Image 1: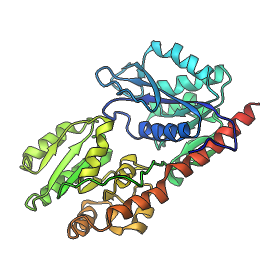
Image 2: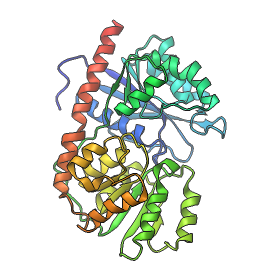
Image 3: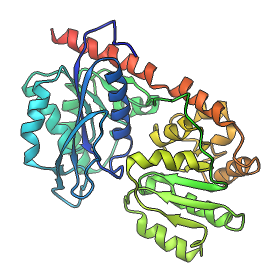
Length: 380
């Protein structure tokens, strides 16, 4: 792609709380990488800076300038929010000072807060992107954090990007006054991709193993179809549900049907998604799951819940890609619709074309770049 003609070439810093080999921080990492790859194609210079956990450092990426500092949780009560190392300060400060725009993938955590504070101290314009992570929480500790850090820091950003209109409403209820706008996730789709021979009747769950992801529904699905010559695979880093998964596999006698295959490096996710028959993500209120976009970009059918942020778009394309209702009965009903057609409700090329047209990265970065240039103009 040619360089952007409607504005300057920029030095852009993306800051993430956590980056890792096994997808510990999930969607925000994938989003940042997709945005940076597209911006690089347009001639801009991008960097990604993050924390990382010892033993799960990000794999070297030849296409993106990524750096990280090893961090640890200060308290077990807030394992992600309290990730920190004083060694972050110097490199992060230098990166902020040498950037035209600082793009913070913002959560309620120390790394997000400190990045915003450094940007304010050095008078660098920054934007925030909250990825559905800043929603109302009535716990006293969260309300105090929001009062003294979350709200005032996001309010100092030039723009706050949200994923959906639902998140936009949630942000407003927290009295965040910074201009907020919807910026959907996007993905680069290779129309010339060579489609792989898929494994027959192999169903995959690929996400962080925490309760919100609805893993219990995936296990129940496996139990109901255990006599149908279908294999169910679970991939993802543990988020608190691994013990439950292992217990249920034994309790329901699913050892030959359902297997937890562990956390896998990001570079292997595409292989898994391109070779399975169906990706099932039964999570509730999932705002904009990148793994679903990644699957469709490979021509793989998907199945999500009605509360998924882009369920309506999926349903308009193929009704069986969205569960009939939010409970297990609705998931089974839509799974049956796909199973009865051997997971060929849509041709691979149709899925790829739909993904490109609806979720292509180019249009997303067009909108993002308009914000970047406005930030630069305001700074002058």
